[in-house]
Length: 196
Image (tube, rainbow, N blue to C red; front, top):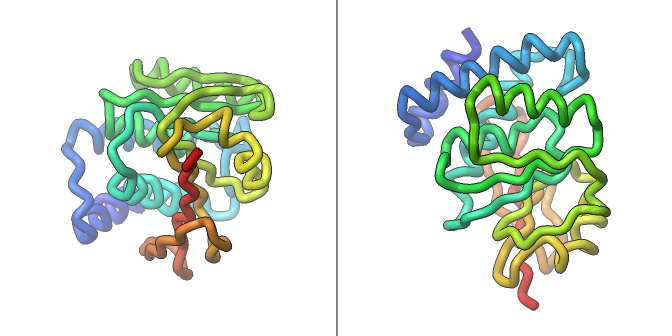
């Protein structure tokens, strides 16, 4: 039932997704619910509502992001950013960085079950990971300091670092408010551009 509400929210907010991609998103949703009892992937308090919040956030992020070729999902966890975006954008490349072997193995199961060919999974600490991506996204606010320090090793010049936050971040961040119909409060996409 909640997934149907999520599909309706996509339509109401002009987030057009074709049926094949919606079907794959539903398969991912089902895999998450199945594995949640085995691995702590997200809040257990109200799992379907939490999934609706996470899915809507990422579909909205997809509309927000500029044109890019490669994106790093920093601290991938359950893979909300990397998996959902890889389903929506099969011609772009996604690097999912997760330090937990259990969660990394879960991400590999999802990749195989959903036949996703445009993701690479790295089971490592972010401190040991380097790339030259166009975009790095983090849903974990605890990683902000580390990501800012590693920006030169992760993001191309002109690329961006995006954090999901519950409040604005100070300059040089640019903060973009958005309303997720599955959340009570306004959320923000806080963006830092690498200029040098």
